[in-house]
Image 1 (cartoon, rainbow, N blue to C red):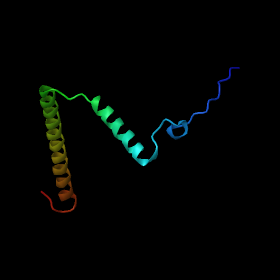
Image 2 (cartoon, rainbow, N blue to C red; image 1 turned 90 degrees about the vertical axis):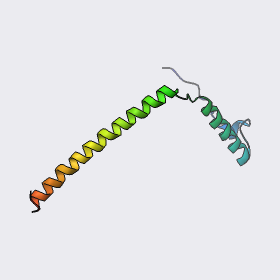
Image 3 (spheres, rainbow, N blue to C red; image 1 turned 120 degrees about the horizontal axis):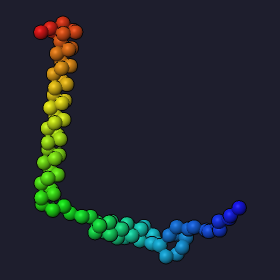
Image 4 (tube, rainbow, N blue to C red; image 1 turned 60 degrees about the horizontal axis):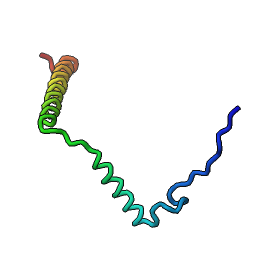
Length: 85
């Protein structure tokens, strides 16, 4: 049977090298946001155009499907509830 050593894990407040007070926490947060923003990869112009076209085509297809279903259900409701053809 193996045993794992028990370690006392403390956050930044317990270790003494974390930010102190609310301004230190805000500063740490802003530094982390900037670090994450540096990791962002900006798409090229051709990629951006391609993604935009894909989204527009998808939206148009969904609009056509919803419009068709709306028309079908509208006709069915007219027939069932007496508005008839």
